[in-house]
Length: 360
Image (cartoon, rainbow, N blue to C red; front, side):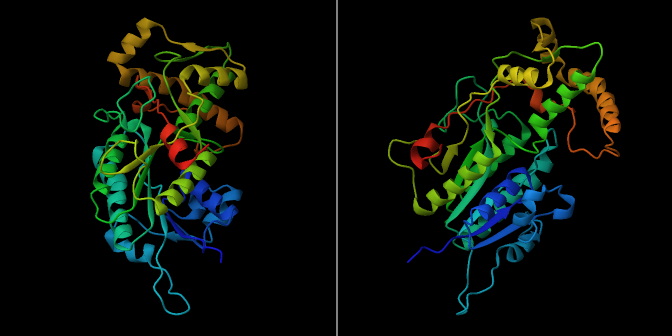
């Protein structure tokens, strides 16, 4: 007799990773029930046509950080015989994705969200609770960081609160937790990190006379990556594995209170490889700032970021207007975030997830 497909709940299901995960599950018919939770409505989420069939019919609007919302989020109709049903897999793809916000914003929208949903998942006996975290929790290092490496200096405030959520989720009795630490996730419709660089490159491409697009720091700075469709597969594989396993195989150490996996492609992406790709796509000169500029930037990063933004945002507005995109109608922007411009390597080792779970 065929095993019944799991019922699946995605928190933050209209976010970048959430919508691709929902589409992956829907397209491959992996779930018996799929429910997509988000605070914003699908009509306001700029969903691509290919994400509509997965997200819109399965959508429930709720603020998952509030305890009062949990019954609506988790309750399922009973079976034909009247038996109570529960979700098998819960994926937490939610949280604050903007950078350079106040601590209180991340505490409420990321940390509190994780803890509230995690407690409810434990109470209801969910078979796998998959928490999306970030490789930016590690101390910056050019060497690929393993799950056992130090996390005393997270790169960003967002990462600091993600790490706190990981630690406190692990203290919830009965929660079948697995944490995935992700690098820069990119793919179709990518905004933020990749979208910012592409928008910036388009500004440089439009300029006459031509200018060289230069990055701070060096070509060696690691900016590891993972395609969003690989991310979706990894999340599903993690849930399947966790539902059947209570611990890591012997020989795998790490945080003793939780199961943690890094997931990353094997490209060892760096600023140098990004510069080469952008040079090829946009047919512009790319390069890196000299030691003097980098030394100044280290001491005055906020000033440097403000100058870059002042220099590019008007040009971007002109490009949008010329293309018929009006009233800030594009989700893309060359606006640089100070936190993302720090001299901090994002370099992670995904060997454990490949070896234990079989991800490729």
